[in-house]
Length: 207
Image (cartoon, rainbow, N blue to C red; front, top):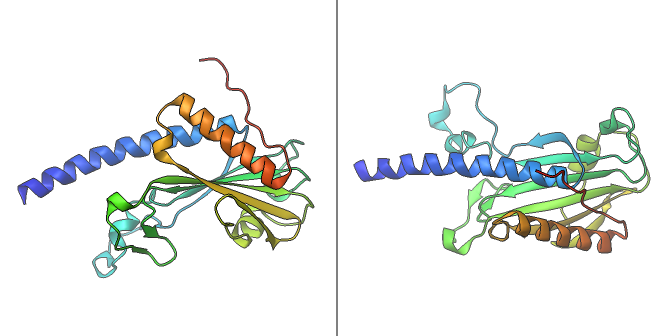
């Protein structure tokens, strides 16, 4: 028991450091894409009270809301007011699904039987481009209606006038700034090619 609790203390410290670094990575990617914070979604919401949690099999995961979370960013070249429900042609919504363990299926709420050594950690980075603006909210009427395409492909069927490209980036590839920049540039090139829309990064200010 004592050894197990030592592992728990190590795990908490490691998890806190990992999540802090991930927030810093997400902010860097957002700024590199010239986007603005818009929304975030959680697979596991934080409980508001502890009563009855002992009867739920998901209670442990609900206290890990960062696990499998997604963040959404908007890039609106025309700088229109209230862009979240005031769409313009050429607007982009970026999404990052933080898949810390690809052995977890958020749709079933179950881990696979594969050992952790056989799974991976990745960011599923996506972009939805507005070709023909429609009324509605970016999250409710676009994000929730468009399924992820196959990795590296485009879904143009989920919502008329909107297309989504998505491609995973393995976290092991993002060891330092140069590696992050290279991976993001490669993703932008792939997205631009598949969507036939130029998607570029923005230069970062000097440190």
